[in-house]
Picture 1 (tube, rainbow, N blue to C red):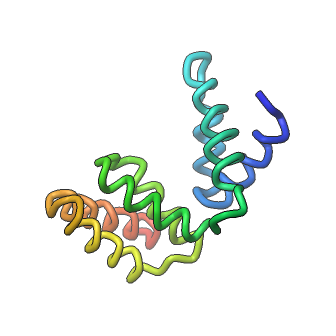
Picture 2 (cartoon, helix red, strand yellow):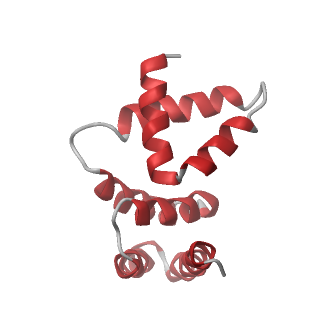
Amino acid sequence: MDKKLFEAGLATRSKVLGKEYVEKSLASADDFSRPMQELVTSYCWGEIWNRPGLDHRSRSILNLGMLIALNRHHEFKLHVKGALNNGLTRQEIQEIVLQAAIYCGVPAGVESTRLVREAFAEIDGG
C-alpha cells in the first residue's frame, strides 16, 4: 500500500463522507475487510477523487447518477450526504433523482427518493 496515496485518500474520504463514518469503517475492518478498506481509500479516494480534471462537486453528481443506475442503495444514501458536503443543494439532488428516474427507470427514482428523504432526516436529526 502506498502510504502517501492512502493518507491523501483518507483526507478526501473524511472530508466528503465525514470523519466519524470513515473512522468507524476503518476501525471495524478485520483481517478480511481491511485490504478492501485500504484499496478504496487509496485508489478510489486518493487517486480518482483527487485527480484535477473534476472538482468534488462534479464527482458527487456523477456518483449519485451512477449509484442510482446501479441500484447501490447503501452507497447512494452515503453519497447523498457526501454530495451535500461537496456543495450540492437539496434541490439539485432532487433534480438528479428526477433526471435519473427518466433514464434509469421510475422504480429506481422512487427508491432513490425514499433514500434521499432518509438521508435528509438523519442529517436533520429526525
